[in-house]
Each structure stands twice: as structure tokens, then as C-alpha cells.
Amino acid sequence: MIPTLEEEIKPQSMPSGPRNVLRSNDSASLWNCTLSPGWSREESDILRKALMKFGIGNWAKIIDSQCLPGKTNAQMNLQLQRMLGQQSTAEFAGLHIDPLVIGEKNSKIQGPDIKRKNNCIVNTGGKLSKEEIKRRLLQNKQLYEITEEEWNKIELPRPEDVFEVWIMKQELENVQAQIANIRRIQRGENLETVEPSSFKEILKMENGKQRSTRNSKRTKRK
Image 1 (cartoon, one colour):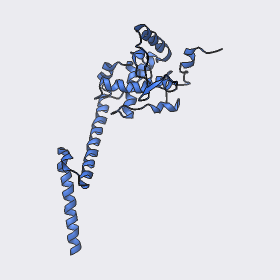
Image 2 (spheres, rainbow, N blue to C red):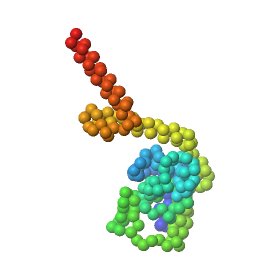
Image 3 (tube, rainbow, N blue to C red):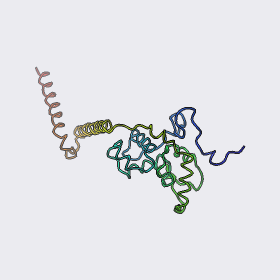
Image 4 (cartoon, rainbow, N blue to C red):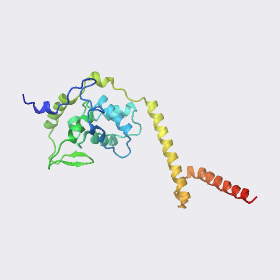
């Protein structure tokens, strides 16, 4: 019996775990989702879970959950497009789906009329009508939406844990900036580029090096 189009594109039920959710052993291209500027892989994974739990484009609930502090609607939407592998998101609005399932499907679409930007399929045709968007929404809901039981079980990082990670990330960035400034000083570059907050610390380190060098020379002379 020849399968219908829906049967061909519908993800197969997994032997264990939720249906319509990609895992690391399901597809090699699962990990080829590109990151928008300013996104880490961990943040992208959190967004993926949040979209499955709250629904595609439900930015208010994602922000209220505090699972991605500092991320704006626009930033999350750009990363969503990269996970879906397409720029248009209207046909998935509000659906509890794994965006990487759609991205996996879109990654295999080829043809002379397929245009991509940042690995996302760009809509080169006319604007979709409301009726067409509604039709696609109903079809995608039937094909790809996980069950309510599944999305209710999804756990997101606690706000306090996310905040601690964010603080550690900021501290790491500050340390990296100070190291970069020290190296610029060692290369004789313009000191005006050094951040005021770290300038004193850098001078202390440099003065300590100079004192150590002078003491070493005196010892050798004796």
C-alpha cells in the first residue's frame, strides 16, 4: 500500500519516550542547527524545551518563566527560525512541537526554487492567506504536536539556577576581558582601550612584575 503524503512526512513513533521529539541518536543533522549571535548551545536547548512546553511563539510565558533571562522576543524568534529551518513561523503559532523535528524535515528539502538564508528556507512566493495558514496549522497540529501530558512533564531550569549561571558567565567574560587587556599592554598597545574598572588591577599586576624583575637583577649582582 502506497503511503499518503502525511504518512511519509509524519515522524515515526519512537520505541520509547515521547513521539515527535528528536533525540541525539535519531538524526545526525539534529546537531547542525546554527546559533543566532549571542546564543549558546545550552540556551538554545532551553528555548527548544520552552517552546515545546508553552507553544511556538508564546514569548510572554517563556519570559515569565525566567528560564532565559535577558533574551528578548526578537532574539528568541530569530533562534526559533534557525531551529525550524525556515523564516515563516505562522503555520506553527501556538503549537506544542519540537522545532528540531521541522528543522530536520526542512534540511532535506532540495530544489532550484528553494532559497535559504542562515540555513533557513525563505518564502519566495506570495504572502499566505489566512485560510492557508489555518489549514497548515491544523495539519501541523495533527502531524507534529506532542501530547498535553508530554509537554506538562517538561521541566525548565529554575530561575535561581539560571541566574547563578548567568552571573558566572558574566564573571567569566570579565576575566577574559582583563586577560585580553593585559596582553594588549604587553604588546605595547594603546592603554586607553583598557576598561577603567580593570585598569587598576592590571597596573598592580604590571607593577608587581616590574618589582620582581628589579629584585631578580639585584640578586644576580650580589
